[in-house]
Image 1 (spheres, rainbow, N blue to C red):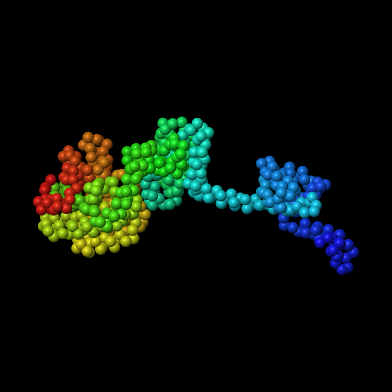
Image 2 (tube, rainbow, N blue to C red):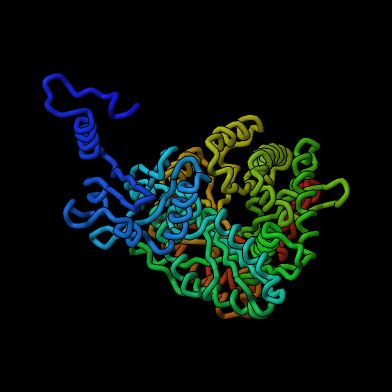
Length: 577
């Protein structure tokens, strides 16, 4: 359609061309986007008032020349913008669609989306510009959230793995200089989270992030890979010795307490160190090696970090096999209970048996609990296993109480894991175990670690009170090794503390251990609690504990854990100490 085909409105004194121009002027003035056209042949450009307003200018402040546009485009975007224009002018592209930054009058850079089209017959381009700064900001925010941890702002696993992959690719350009990964797992973080609140847990994670960041070298990457798991990417490290020293520096940051909302909190971490020296090793393999080394450090407990050794992979494979076997063990009834006596220092008589589970593996023989209990904890199998232990211990103790007059007051102590404590079914399972076995509630002791007791403080206090009201005695096991809060401890309906064997064993030779035991006994007495000392192996340790007014003891000095037949022999002819 040409301008000659357009008729002016009736009563108008203007001709068709004037009317068409008026319509275009109204359109340009009212358009929400900034309009422009460019006669390439004569190099004349026209931009609308709105075009100028988008970059902060009034109509009369800048002209319509091409130079006014190009000199405001960001230098890094100018080449791509010109290439897009030329492609449209030369007919290589049907439409002009390009994003670039333009300098606003206030000095800021605004993201502009430019759309245009070339007229088929004439060297004429026309189109519009739109300010998309807010859209780009949202895109950048979403992109940042996709690759960064929302709490700490650190790279998440996705970005960490991407950077790890780039580092491995660059190794060939650096004469094969090793790339290292240090995987960090905070120890007992959930205890802080549960006892002091999620907010305090978040403060702890932020403080750990700040301390770790201060240790980084230029080019290193610190990431939060989820929960209480962090990782450091060492982009080029001279040797394993340097990586080892770096891990020592990281470990040192946990020595000083962290003041979190008025609470002084000590925390520690288990770390795994892995170096890539094989050109074919992937980022996933390197991270997996660091995680494997971390697990060895956590299981060892003697050192805060371990350096990956290929032998560890064999151990990891063995662990997978054990997990599979463990799943079948309950169905195949491969578990048995052993019983270790707890003796009264008052009269030297037997007061209780602690029920300790053993795995009678069809090929491995009797498997120690320290080899399979952690796996059961991690996989959740500890819940059905703990239920079986509870039922079997109650059944056996009821039978012994009926069969042996001298054992009518003997109790059985059963350990309750963190996973069991969190289970809503725990109370009913205990009620059912007592009812089905016929054992009176006074014949059952439940042992819980400090971390189990201190987790989810309010809920656990109510649950423990319900158990105490049933007549069950409650003990804190391994006391002295976890996070203790005396103000919280007073709120729990506990009957006794069990001093961890690490303090009792060798106390006769170590004044420091003896002082810890003495302090725990004084604390217990002030709280009205009785005490069981674990790990007694010598007569000298026994004498020291008696002199300190400790009430009960347990350990190899009296007896190792016994199978059911041996425990019956004790009950039939109970020794006196």
